[in-house]
Figure 1 (cartoon, rainbow, N blue to C red):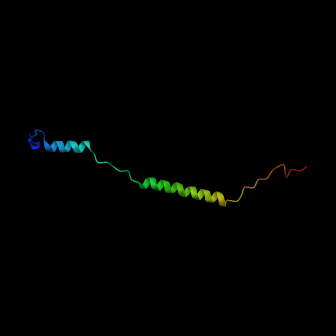
Figure 2 (figure 1 turned 90 degrees about the vertical axis):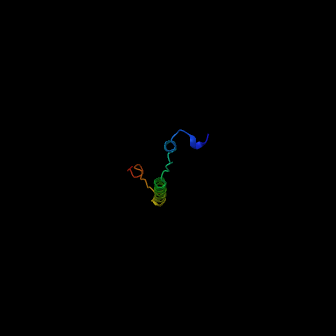
Figure 3 (figure 1 turned 180 degrees about the horizontal axis):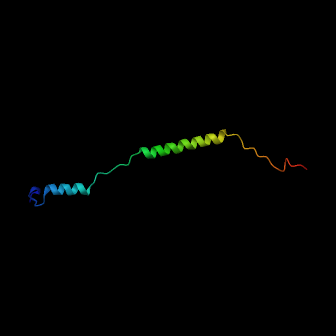
Length: 67
């Protein structure tokens, strides 16, 4: 028996195979890249601000108390 002698409709088979294997959809890369870039940039800015900030000076109340 030849392949062309089949009683199945060739067009319907092709349509069913196309429905069974949907094309794979790839997620876009730019949102993850933008988020990672923003996080890295804010981390570097925060570290620079912490290094360049003047030191915290505390004043003890007992040191200036009369007595």
